[in-house]
Structures are given as structure tokens and as C-alpha cells.
Amino acid sequence: MPRIHFQQQLVALKDKLLAMAALSQQALHLSVEAYITSDMGLCDHVIEIEAGINAAETSVDEMAYDLLAKEQPMAIDLRFILSVIKINGDLERIGDQATNIAQRAQILNDLPKISLPVDISEMGEKVGIMIRRAIQSLLEADAKLAESVLAMDDEIDQMNRAVQSELVEVMQRQPAVSSQALNAIIVSRNLERAADHATNIAEDVIFWVRGSDVRHKFSLAEAD
Image (cartoon, rainbow, N blue to C red; front, top):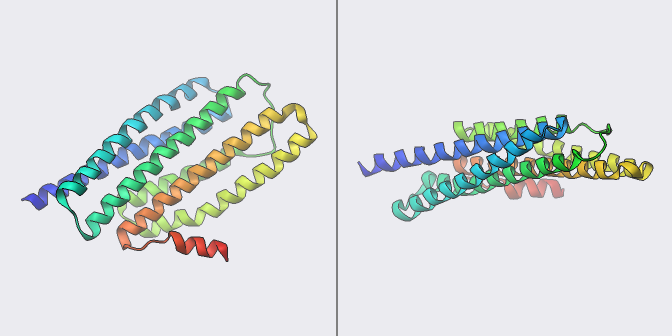
């Protein structure tokens, strides 16, 4: 009977984390939309969502640490709870990145609207796909799907570098639009960081499901 209760608690913990993940995913999507459309109402909504994400982070952490202390889980259950704690932090940071993007949109609302030679919308869509896949891999305990998230991270890194390179040139050629270009660089950087957090989540799913730590393997591959 105690074992059944423990498994029910694990399911409840996973449900809490998935609800928080939905908020983080929504916040990032809306922040990019706010940046593209200059919709200040969306900016306010993102900031409201972040408050919910922060509250959810506390709740998930408390439940996870309580299970660790009271149940002393072993093997895959222990890996699951440890992964939840780490994923929880990454989801909260995705919410932070979304808020940063929304704040950039608010700043840009007071500046003249210009067209820049970068596609923030496409970058945001690809990062959104990474987050959705990472969350789905958690939901389905699918390590192969999690691996597909890791494979996308390099593309986002390249897109971020291309944005920075292109917009530095824009600022040199057109100093009058430096503020708009600099804000776009910051938005790109926030999206790149959100992609890093999606990658972290995917790595933690792999650790939970397979018991293998892939972080250093990918670091060594990048070094080569």
C-alpha cells in the first residue's frame, strides 16, 4: 500500500511539472509574438504568467524534496525526482527569458519601427519546437525524442551568431537604428538561452530514462 501511494505521489509530481512546463512554453511563445507585433497587452500577459511560473517552481521543489526526504527512493525513481528538480529550474529560467523578451518589446514600443535583416520569428519557432519536444519527451519518457532536441541546439547557436554578426554590421552602417538592432541582439540571445534550457531538460530526461549522463559527451564532441 505505501508503494502505491508513493507512485501516486510521483504521478502528481510529474503532473505539477508538466503544468509548469505548459506555462513556460506559453510565456516564450507570447513574448516572441509581442516582440514581432508590438502588442503591449501580450507583454503584460507574459509578466503575469511568469509570476505563476515562479509560484509553480516553489511548489514543485517542495514536493520533490519532501519525497526525497520521506520516501528515500532508489534507482529510476530517485533519478526521476532528481531530474524533476533540475528540469524545474530550467523551466523557471525559460520563463525569465520570456520576460526579458517581453521587456525588450516594451522598450521598442517607444522607438521608431524599422525592418531588420534577421528573422526572430523563425528562431522563436525553432526554439518553441525544442521546448515542445523536450516536454513531450518528459511526458512520454522518450529518450530518443529527447535526443532530437540535443541535435537542434547547434542550429540555434548558429542562428544567434548570424543575428549578432548581421546586426553589428547594421549598427556600424546605420548608427541611428542602433537601439533597435541592439534590442534584437538581446532577444536573439534570450532565445538562444531558452534553447540551452530546453537542451538541459532533454539531457535530464535521458538521465532519468537511461541512467546515463550525456552532458559531458556532448561537451567533448563540441571541443573536438
